[in-house]
Amino acid sequence: MKILIGSIVGGIIIFIWQFLSWTMLNLHEPAQQYTPKQDSIMAYLNTQFDSSGGYFMPNLPKDASQDDMKKFEENAMGKPWAQIAYHKSYDASMGMNIVRALITDIIIVLFFCWIVSGFTANSFGKTFLAALLTALIISLYSNYIIHIWYQTFDLEAHFIDNLVSWGATGVWLGWWLNRKKV
Image 1 (cartoon, rainbow, N blue to C red):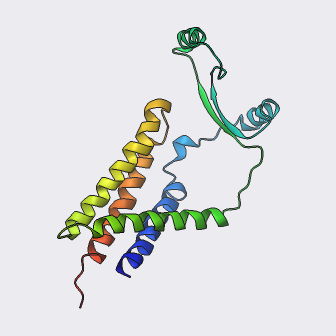
Image 2 (tube, rainbow, N blue to C red):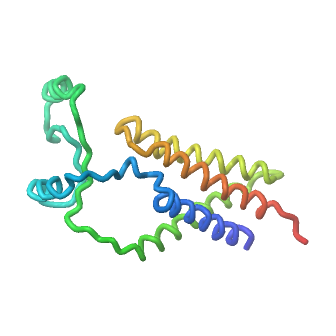
Image 3 (cartoon, rainbow, N blue to C red):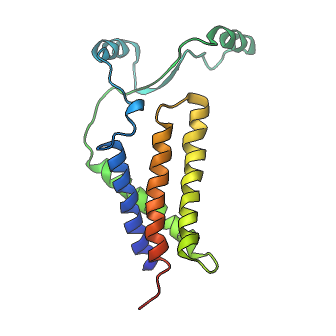
């Protein structure tokens, strides 16, 4: 029961931080900037893509030869490039997305609780440090590795998200999981 309650509250802590980061604090704005040219850009893209998908430009077809790849790299070096996540239909209904995000947050905290519950002589400090290390693992593996290849514009925001949400969850779980029964 202690792990279940810890997971639910911890998941809510992470969920609340995610909400604040993406909305009120708008930390991810550098990766979702506005352009006054959006209408003409979207009109053009609508004529170019038949279906939703992710596109990397410039790029080569799958069957390109090694020689084609070498020439392409030489020609593309130092020139502009883009990644486009194109969707044929906009859907702003958030209800199910919010539920899925909250459930996911609770499940990942449940996994974390299961791991730290196996620590020998666990303590507030061990749980908190494990939460911070989890934040670093997530940041380095998920966000930084992608940034190395695709230079994302909100790398720092993701790092802050992971550190703050897992740090706060670590404080909660450090106290909750290690408190003495009264």
